[in-house]
Image (tube, rainbow, N blue to C red; front, side, top):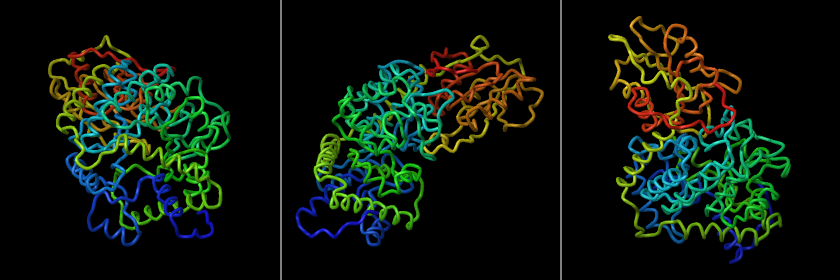
Length: 531
């Protein structure tokens, strides 16, 4: 942590600290009162500023929490952030919440009007539970093979297509009263390692990488998140601490909204800059308006000592920023302009006492409908369309083999989605669910091999493709990728299907395609794909 002489007490010192407090998220407000939060405040001197999904376990619970917090909050209006991208990353992933297939499915559908509607219904769900800041959409370019940090979170690999869909998604999301955040500027295209686990460095941006961000800005995106990767052609420094990168966003793209950092609490993000507090100072000094230590809605259980440590780390970051101003590393005007942008976001999108929220049931039902529509327009038969529908001989069984996930991607909640395919196929076929690697009974007429994330690394055949190869010697095999489509690469399966999402709408669409009740209409939106 940076140190400086103790500031004299007075209005100026108080005003400075108040401004700095606005620049660090999560904030200090107690969002879920109770004994645990009271103990935390007594021990660490502050509330956690977070909503834990181990205690808030439903949309109704979230709505009650944010309503209460908006009544109890002093100005500005309550503003709660979340990652709700659709597809791979959804913080609101309770069973009753309709999950949309996500960006690459929208890319496979190729319809900007559908992308705008998807943004609008996600926004409707969020606003109905009092959450009005979404850290989406991803404006990065997809690649082949997929990048572990991006994959199906990206719309496509073609910059013009990504720009068209990202701009539409932004318009839809903000039409529902939810702030959009274009990320991860200046683009993760070409980054080979996951920024959640390592510090990526590339020499230059891929052609067209800035085009989607320009489209998001032109669509009125309230926020842009700057990534932690280094692009040497711009500046040999992590983007979120690079004055030249942020000047590119402000001056070349004309962005006047809130610039947000990537999650600084991730060691791979803050360690290259000397630790959490130093990274925060470097980011704000470079032009970032708000440093994100995490969103307000957290997954998983944290022990009391872990929560105390997180609150104290936040306090260290606030103090480091105050100290940096006092010693001249950050100008007071820089802090004042950043705080003004944060307050403007609160007043534009936050909810105050008595704010009207949409009806949850209606918003969620509309999301179900749009999820089904996106799935119906996106599921792609990559090979073997002439072999569909699947027809079994009398008395034959359809074996359904799920290959276990191997991915360790931090930015992924969909890997916990239930396996819906066997039950859906069971409505039309006699189904036998079997583990990978086992022998098949003699009465099996065809095999469906599926998985979500079964590829151990670039250049390796996925586990699902290997299982398809083993079984294809004796059986007709269909392989389905419910995650990144490169799970299909190198597979000898007779039929290859890319679904882009494991959620209900996509699984149901795949079932209907296999049974002949629906013709697949999607196209893989990633150049360089090989099967």
